[in-house]
Image (tube, rainbow, N blue to C red):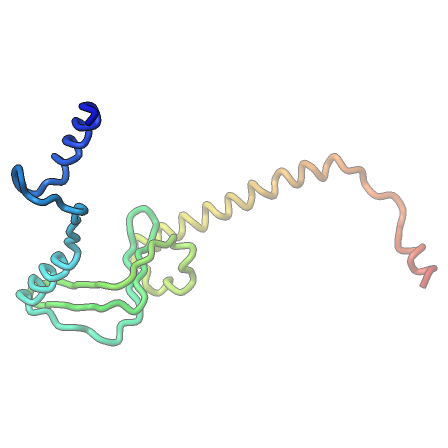
Length: 156
């Protein structure tokens, strides 16, 4: 046997051998997922806090500092009044506030209302900026001379 090939095979065996010399080799490396363990740990921690499920909540919106909203549709909400703890679980989507309007206007607090006023002012300024270049382009077009309605009335 070729010594170079033998060294290559021995290097491969070191990676997959479970025990010492003479033990069987593993077919593939098993990767353990810990998500179920995390869920169990969270469930036991919530059970210790004596949380109660709150039914009938259709959506939950969490407003972030950067102007985005974490939106839960039909979440599972659990609360513990004694521990001042709320647990919200379900599918979450991160959206911009503009995408959620006008449905979330009643949910906005003082800080968010100020942000919305800044947003509206910014949109108004943007519209003004968009209109300004159009007026400059109109100045280059010569004014119309005469009426063009008369020939169309004659044809009818």
